[in-house]
Length: 462
Figure (tube, rainbow, N blue to C red):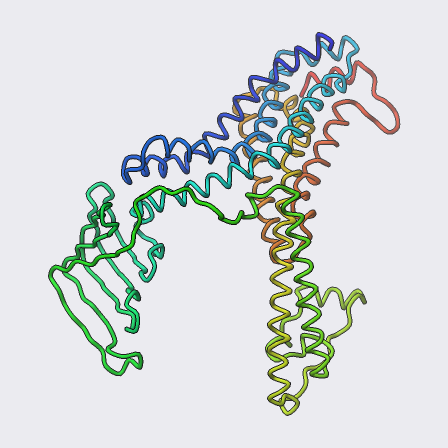
């Protein structure tokens, strides 16, 4: 490797690591207080909290590494431009393409390593994180109790706590829906304040409530209603465990699976979809109609793209819905079967798209390292300094990229866009812009070439 390439790679390393550290730290700040609350407020041991923190870094690194590449390119090439090293290289007859080649090669190596990380390491980290959180909830059920949200982790109970002091267990504005008593209607318990206690020996969670009411129908019909006021009352939730048992047999979610596992699941879902679609078509044939949109309740729900498709001649108008007299009891029964199978086929399609999104995401996010290299190098030369301007540009492009990923997931889940389009569109948009800027600064022209003196003057003025 030539001296120039080694020099550039050394210059890139420090800002790249700095960018990864800063972005990871910013992403961690949102969860750091939750981890501190588990340790200081919930009583979870420090080793468990540290393991949660380390396992939770996986998905953050998957996002911060491409952004670190962008920060490194902006800061490095901005400094080279500010110190007139770009002008000196160009005046020496060295084309900027030679300067970008090692940067693109390094970005490609980072992209390959990140792809392997996303496929082989990150799923296991996400799976271990989810299992450890489940184990924490088993060991400390009070860790599941949060203020301002409905809590339904305890079987038979649903609670709302307006304000909670974790250290002392004091509560305010309490609402409990108790459906734990078999054969009795659900009762509603409200209290102004109370205190929370947990007995690990008996595995009982006790709620000491003050100044409250108990509302309960005396029978299922609700014709008789009971209302009781109390100054002090204690309620026990039994069967709450306090042992950290390793979770076994838990099925993996989409972000806890490798590409091979997700592809196998997609094949299964496709088989289920075809089976349900065939049963839906069979029911439609027995009814004597042609389209699912002729079924009751579905006639006014064509796809969003139907008007455009009909305007382009790619889709015919759906057949008119049969009159009410057409629907005999037997046909209505068959129509319900057709709708159920059609809904199950649609649900399978949605899951297929979700798995497809995760598969393409494992490749599209690492490929952003190359895209950000093509984009960051020329922008860094124009920004000249790698300080505030580099940070601002990094945030702008990273936020744009992240919002495109989130929006793409939603579009794919709702079947508005194919998974590959949803995940690769930000790379395509930013990649085209970056390629255009790179070709411009490498002085690739179609037509008359500018003189070397004009090129040097233009670079110096950037």
